[in-house]
Amino acid sequence: MKRENFEWARWIPIFIFAIVLMVIYKTIDNISQITEAVRRFLAVVSPLLYGILFAYFFYIPHRAVEKLLKKARPKFISKRARGISTFFVFLLLILIVALLVTFILPILITSVIDLANSIPGYINYVLDYVNNLPADSFWHNLNIANTIRDSSSDIVNRYVNLAGIEQVARGIINVAGEITSVALGLIISLYLLWERDRIADFFKRLNKVLFKNEKVSTRITKYLGQVNKVLFTFIASKGLDSVINLVVVTSILLIFNVPYAFLLGLIAGLFNFIPYLGSLIAVIGIAVITFITGGMSLGIKVLIPLLVFQQLDGNYIEPRIMKSSLKISPILVIIAVVAGGAYFRVIGMFLAVPVVVIIKQILVEYISHSENGNTLE
Image 1 (cartoon, helix red, strand yellow):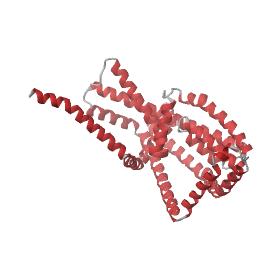
Image 2 (cartoon, one colour):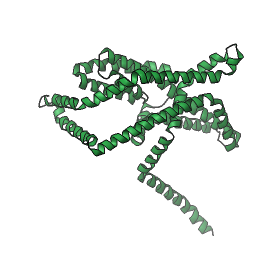
Image 3 (cartoon, rainbow, N blue to C red):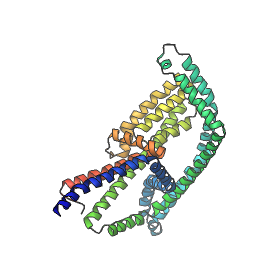
Image 4 (cartoon, helix red, strand yellow):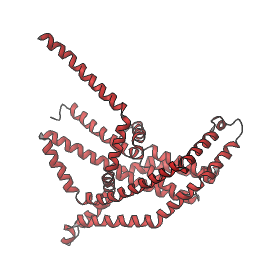
């Protein structure tokens, strides 16, 4: 009997380890199916994600107006400060949408159409420039001309034939679906701002029901508070800094009369949401497009002030806006952004950093709590 117990004690851990290896192998072997399932799930819940994003971004003006109204002498206004501040945000959203539709959107659409129609001419310009370089040039050894020619032919074949038309139709449908998700997200954000106290109270009550142990419940509440703080710091601060990037970069491009200035400025603002890599990618992309559309001289003139602003923003403006650093290694950020983009495309690049920061914060708190001789039980 003891012999049998000894054998089981030796083989059960090996058996469990083998099962774990099989699970890991099957996960890696079916990683494409898993990522596709996650993408579909994100597409379904995208209105809620947009709602949370907008709620964090509009929380600052919403809270400021609410505090101001609570100090008002008429009790009718002070008692309804939350509702009036929500209505104020709603009016602000309408104003922003109206400005975008009336002034910005037509310019962006015109720029996109003009840029798309001009791409063949720009490709020929780049090919002529490369072909006219000296025969012993480093760029000739890279065989760039043939690479550009093959890539442009592939693009033409993909988007001119029937399959390309189908892809364009799918793209239009996807854009329409994304616009719908954004619109629903705006509505959801208003609800989240209005009912944020009730929502927070619901999760506190749910936490107490799920975790009967008071210590565990307290730790979970603390973790959720830290998650909320991290998300607010990242989304609100990055959102404000991205608006600053959009305005400054667009202004620089307009000063130098760069074609598609509004479109390129919008790209700079959006890419700024990606820490470290985003603004650098945007600057390089803008410089390349400016070089192609306006020549080498204009490209260099634009690149210099953009790099200066990028350094100013990264070392002074953004830290002042965030106030408290997220305290995460740049290498970890880069790995998270690359992995998020590889598996979940653009939305993965945007969500990678908040997710990694949240996981890191929870792990650090748990380790610190355990080192002090405490447990969650």
